[in-house]
Length: 63
Image (cartoon, rainbow, N blue to C red; front, side, top):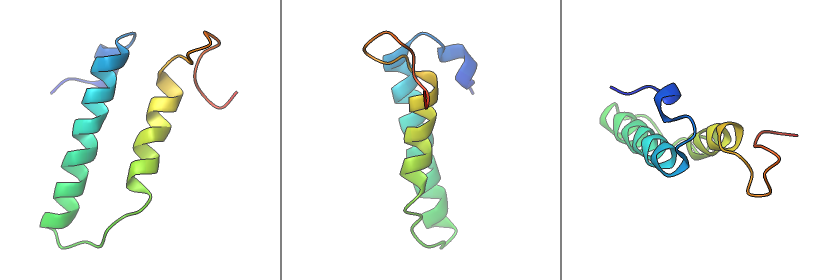
């Protein structure tokens, strides 16, 4: 399986990669009979915010 580092600088592919991880996480929780995790999506979006450059060119992240 590919790693997050392999997608550095490839925003569209990175979004697809993390989207697939989100889908797998939702399916795994459902398979195990675990309750819905409302924070799961926010954690995935947080990863995207940290690694994708901002559209204004200043970089992503919290700053």
